[in-house]
Image (tube, rainbow, N blue to C red; front, top):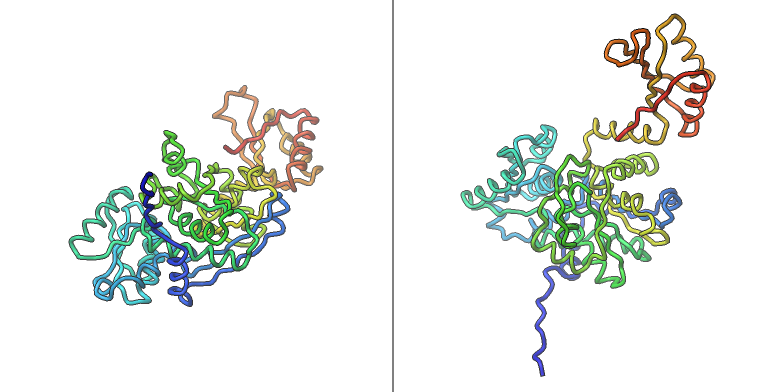
Length: 412
């Protein structure tokens, strides 16, 4: 008879997560989980949103950071903590470190936007700029950890951090106990590890779906045995992680039903819809969960889906670009390229067609020199505002019927 196999205890348990919830209660925002009727009707799923973008630092990362700080011995807290981060982990750790009187040092890459440096400093942290990449900043943070006898706080590959993030699931299932599916963004895997562990313990049949940006499919590639690059300028920089955690990869492997990828256009659409419909600002990573429903509707239709809006820290200029690009994709903003003959009255006759179709002209641009048209020809770009795609199509037909050669300048 074979000896029984000894199974190692899981690194994070429901009891750990419940203890974390009691520990951090009152120091973080107990954010709401609300059903979105409009997004549900749009997707065919019952969509429930967990508004973690309403935390003080506008991201869920506070939960894990605070749990970690509270579990540290007093002597270690007095010496201080250090982390490498240019995002929400830095701000969450800095904010709660200041509250608790724990000195916080954050190492950031030199190219980190000034606004992120200032926000982190504003929460009381000492910011050290080092290296051109996150990897260089991370290596330097580990050097300073040893030199200064500080405690390094990893953004995701730490059981106490994971337990703190898992408190989200306790609140979600308290507010929406009938959820049967969770769509959770994955960068390093800390959020899914915590939330998935708690959800599976409370509801073993819970369907846990991880979501990654197509440009950074690191966990998807690792667990699926794919050879895929993780690089590019993604809107979801909060989950743009090249190397999943050693601890989190095993937890994700054991609890996730699957990992799906979402394209940049789905992330942009998700950010825009959440602002337009729910009147809430989310960053690209925070929009990834709902982006999965847009990219893979058949996977979620008929399901009761919980989505964590895990962060709301998005640059205002970037947000404006995302919204304008969404208007363009929906046909409400358009740029038409019209080929004309360079003669008096031509612009007037073109404008008359726009007037007849009740289309608002926003901007005009002539091109006579840098074109391969004949010398008497010109290219006219017209940026305009329409009600919807059907209205835009009517305008293009009207211009064509009036003898103009028209093309639509499309977005990528």
